[in-house]
Amino acid sequence: MTSRSLLLVHAHPDDETINNGATMAKYAAEGIKVTLVTCTRGEEGEVLVPGLSHLASSVEDGLGLHREGELREAMQILGIADHRFLGDPERQWRDSGMMGSEPNNRKDVFWQADLDEAAGYLVAIIREIHPQVLVTYDEFGGYGHPDHIQAHRVAMRAAELAADPNYGVGPAWDIPKIYWNTMPRSVIQAGIDKMKEIGSDFFGVTSADDLPFAKPDELVTTVINGSDYVDQKMDAMKAHETQISLDGPFFALSNNVGLDVWGQEFYTLVKGAIAGTLDAAGRETDLFSGTMSQE
Image (cartoon, rainbow, N blue to C red):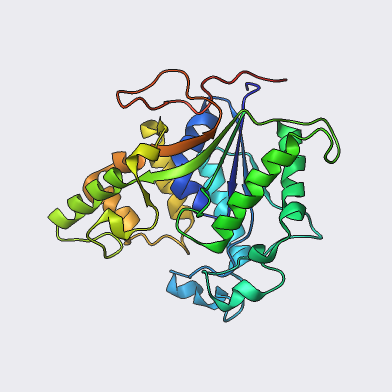
């Protein structure tokens, strides 16, 4: 085990695997400490397994507890030993639902969380594990979900507060590099085009421009080649059975385009300097490039 540490902040169980599963498995296999912080339990998620429909928030409201189990299984598959939910037994936040939905207005949802209170819990984790790298969403939360937007706000605020020696308890820790998840338009379009060739679709769209999470390619500063860990990523996605359908677009894309479509994961560097070995497009190939242990 090295002294290098990677912190990922996500909104719901399954977000981590879809966005960063190969990256997480790769770095964990290399002996780097990988810590995942999930901000809610995804109580308002859609239930894709008919036999588990009773777990929905509108019925028994048991989805959050079930998704905890899905996340534990996924993390075991990816080789991640350190996973935590934001908060403590006395203070936790609930899934806020999609933007504009009724759950947005509940006082206990993450969208309504006090920013500095929520960030304070994350500051304690940052000062404990001393990450060289933080990964979270962009300011739009990738596609506009309120919990993704709030996770971005909390992660960025916590990074700021953790570096302030006058804030809170314990020595300050300034995270050297911060990345936001990015899905380049060209990669998404290539997948859409391939699916069209075989008479299928991807989320029912014909152009990457129709998808809110498709970002301009020039925003990509860093790409991680996790091709050796794609099988782990796909198995971890299967563990999130209530959220990711085995006959849905994710697995259809894998079956018809090949598993390599999930082997590369893309990032935008928003703090720190591009360094280390670059690929032909001038992109970093290691999140930790240019960092040194501050221990």
